[in-house]
Image: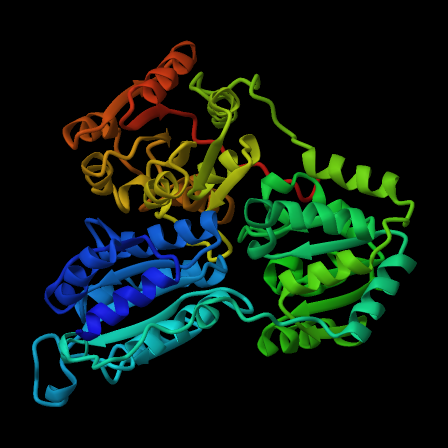
Length: 537
């Protein structure tokens, strides 16, 4: 048995059925081993796309998302999305080919020390050392990716290791391939429970791993048990996230903030008194010492307790300890209403007569509502924010706290692979869609239908709005895009294309895209309006 076979069998034992990958010399033994392990390889057009797909797949399944690329330039091409996956708290196993151990230092083809390159972007990065150890290596990597704050882990695979003899090494036991629990201590849970009970206006803030897409039932149970709003924050715009409406007003009224895996960073105004009352108490539950230390730095003596625990495990303990008798129905309703607040309407006219982002989002929402089971993906700068504010579904993916854009099309492919019975709608700007446009060919080749809706304002509008505010209309540079016919290009790649300039034609075009059964692109010319912001109203 080769090392590659042991690796593939270990992944299969961990429940892996799909690897998102772009091929290359050094990983061909693993490709070959995946045939016998019955692991499907979804072959992408760019290495970064494979990482984005693994990220989305992990978010939607709750399982490890696996991506694999070749050595050196292949690994380097994939680095950016690791940053996104880390901040989106996505358990991703990033496998890269590598030059042989036996040729270290001799100038082998694509020789590069990849571990330092990925170390700052991952929870763990290491180079496999033996064929016989690959099973243990995979178990270690998977367990690390899933546990605590989930995130990407990188393993470099030297060619002579995957080709080498794994002897009689066995696949690790099932327990070694699971998440390691990190429970809150009972005495700490009691303190937190009592603090929540004593508060009049508590808020529980979570990060991406505790959002409703990933932990819907757990979030609902926790909110009921502690009788307090539980709010996931996963946008780089923080309290200006338009999908949170006027939530900033709720934060300003809170007398207790429990950060359940939610970092106290720029998205919360660093915990300053401009976003919350000076006498508001803070409790932080976080698996990472770095984040607990950051909370101490930003909050000072307002931080009453910092607890080392996995937010998922802590949520279970707090749910079990709560009695749901806080009598805070009015507070919870007030917070819900603030989050639901929108200071725009789909009926608002555009100054230039074009389709507004709000009207486009409302039309997509009608399709989502008609679909039943759906996944909505929002990606991009200004239009991505409009989409977050104007659409909703039981399953939602956004580009996450990293602030990086461009993965939405890749997310759509992975979403359809993860949820084949769901209708998948990905909304993105004309800037965003250009990052991985070639993946429309991947979708067509893989027979993976979904609908991409491009809000096309012929502009990098987020940066354009910054220039307008900071420098004025006479100092605009480098943000204009063309009226490219993305819809026609998608047809050329094997998909379905629609081009819309009139609101009256929009619903029919979206319906045709859904019914096409193909990877579809609905290219909609819109007004380039600044995104709404819930804060400050």
